[in-house]
Each structure stands twice: as structure tokens, then as C-alpha cells.
Image (cartoon, rainbow, N blue to C red):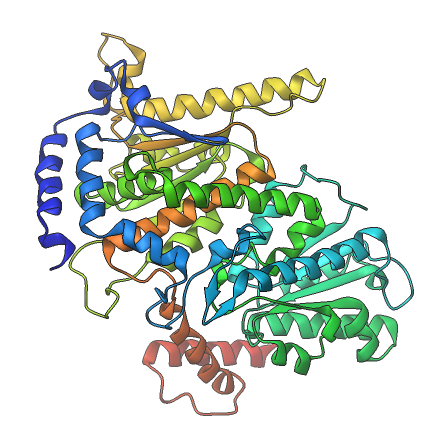
Length: 544
């Protein structure tokens, strides 16, 4: 039996028909609505009262979760069962933030020991760099880090370093940290021009250590060092490269010194890997103590997800309400709107987390689905977005669900009254926008007729995620919340969120196009569009 043929799905369809006639401006007349539809855990409060739901909706959604055996799937996730069915692997990113004294066996082996051993090796590297003991080819201390990676090896650490840039915890020397991901070399070229090769350390992060984007940038970086230093590759590799991969043999063959290798494992998906050694740039930016605080925040959310009742469980409710919007209210766009410039890279991170995980059209056994799954997700820092796409949110023809993310406290430790006023202004804008999206023109309480071009429809559903303040702990909790939300939705939709076969064919096809683009093979086998584009490229290149 598919989920859509269950009685709980049919109950929700009937309930959705009733809710279609309820506008948020009417639902929000209930004085108890915030109290009954907001939930808190640790440093995070989530307000669902501006969603197009009531208490009956939540009750029916929890029944749907039980029908899909969500509690059983949560247990299997944490126990290390091979729930990544297409690759016959567990998905144990939660083990990366587990307490050191616990035990979790996979294939008869306690993986928590491996995690803790790797964390200790990572900490020693951080200490050597922060203390100035790690020196480049000229004997000078390292002062600049360049992380070379793509996808999960880039987006998570990049986001975290930006979000936590002011949260250094017992860290040593301040280090400049850069990120390079584009395969065309433009990012790397821009960065290298301003760096001192003698004091620059490159982190090459790749799960397979075969990703062409990453290795191309790494080769360019090594040539830059070779040309600048005049020393051999053995010295360059030992002094200026760290490798992070699930494939130690490939790291060694590339030239990464054994002592400079950090490992993670095939039971960690790339988009779930910033809690592992892939997070080394984070630890270098904020200190190892700060990195461990981030892990603790994620672990706190893990334990909440594992133990809280479904009807009080933040990731469960966040995921189920998303399912409600997609499958019962026919909403297929999701905007992520952080009202904090430090979270500028959160939307891009969540784009990968959600769309690469749940952007699937077949179930766990490969059968086509007859219902919608992951919505299109995008976003921007709220104040910028207000001057970009909020016009569509307020007066367009698309229904869009929104997540507003903001911190209650900021700048309390400064005497700068102007900065505190700016934070108050940010809070006011965040609350105002979520209020107008929900209530529309009725917020003005004006009986005068309003021309059509000034009318706000309202009834756009949103969730507000309110952090006490943005710290490594609360940030870790926030990201783990979204990870588990994605898992909840995958269970309801009966899909595997831990593979990404949709990215593989493009890699193969790109490889097959290299020789024709280099005039080393015929391009006649390709479709007329691709053939025509390649001919035009050749013509332009011949003119240069």
C-alpha cells in the first residue's frame, strides 16, 4: 500500500478542503494560537502559527507519520541500519557528534572510536597551525587557509565559517580562510593574486578524491607554489597541503603526506559531512573548542529528534508541515529568509541539503511516484530579499512557503548603540514581513478602498525560527534541525534521501565531451543543439 492510498492521507485531503476556506488573517484572531503552535528546544523557538494549519492539522499529520512508520525509521537511522538502500550503506552523520563514551557498532566495529580518533588528529593539526608550529617551505608560520572542495566539501564549511566568524572560542592566531569551488579556475585565480605562497596552506577535500573540479584546482595551486618557491613537490605537499577524504589511497597517490591526511567514511554523505574532518576550516576559523560546541548543539537536536513525542518534536513538525504545504495545499516553492548577514550562505546550503536529498521521483525500490516531493528552494538574506523578490511573495500569483530565521540577541556585549539599533530594525523588518505575508492588507485596519496595485493578498504560510543568539551551539542545533526535517519528509515520501544519482550522468557526459571540444574526436554523435554549440565554440576559439 502506498502512502497516498492510506486512510491518514485521505483524512488530510478532506481536511485540506476545509482549510482552503480559512485565511490566515482569520486564524490569527485566535489569541491562543501562538501558544498552541509554537515549540521550543534549547536555544531555538519555532513559531508555526503563521502556517495554514490548526491543531487538527497537526493531529492528522502525526497520524500520517505513524502510518509511514516514522518512529521506526528514526530508530533505524540512529542504529546504523543500511537505510541508504541504493548504496547499501548506513547514514550516520549523527555519529559524528555522538558522545565520546558511547558505542555504536557497524559491521562489528565501534565507529565512535574512529570518530574520536579522527577528531583528536584534527585537533592536533589545528593546534599546530594556531600555535605557529606548522610552517611553510620558507620556514614562516601559516597565516592563510584555502579550502578546495565542491558541494558538501564546500557549502557546509563555507556557510559555517561565515555564520560563526565572530565566535572564536579559545582559538590561537587569527587565520584568513578562503573557499574555492568553481571548476573554471576563476575563484582560485582571484585569490592567489593576493596571497603569500610561503604562508598559505591548502585543504583539499573530496570524498572520493577523484572529483575533477577539486583536483583541477588543487593541481593549479600546487603549480603556483612550485613556481613561487622553486622547491620540489615533496616539500610542497608536506608543508602546504592537507587532504580530507574517504579514499586514503587516492590521497597518497596525489602526493598528500600521510601525516597530513584526515579521513571520513562512506557512511557519511557529502552534504552531511561538515561535522567530520571536512569541518577542519571551521575549526581553524573558530577554534577546536568552538567546533566541539557546534557538535554539541547538533547532538542536542539529535537527542530531541530521537526522544521527543512526535507532536512536540521540532524536526518532525517542521518536516510534516512542509509535506502539508506541498502535497495538500499545492505549494511547490520554498523561500529561506535569514535576517542575519552572517547566515548569508544558509540558503545555498539548504538548497543542496533539501533538493539533492529529496529531489527524487522514484521510491526506495525504484518505482515512479504519483505525488509531489521536494519543492524548489531558494533564498537570500531578508533585507536584501525585500528589495529583490518579496514583490512576488506579496503580490505575485505563486504560493510560496517561507522560513524566517533570526536571532533575538545580538550586540549585547558592545557599547555601540547604533549597532544595537540596527539589530532592532532587523527584528522589526523580519516580524513585519511575516505578518504582512500572513494577514495581507488587513494589517492596516483601514476601511478605505485600496486600489488593486496596492493590495496585499496575505495567506502566504511561513515559519519563524527564533534563535536566542547565534552561537556555535545554536548554529549546530539549527543545521541538525534541517537535516532531520529532510529525513522526516523522505520517510513520508518513501524516498532515499542519502543518494544523488541525478548528478552522475552529467559527470560522464562532460567527460565524453572533452575530446570533441579539444578537436581530438568527432562531435557527430551528439544532438544538433550540442553539435551546433560546439561548432560555435570552435569558431570563436579559432579567432583568438
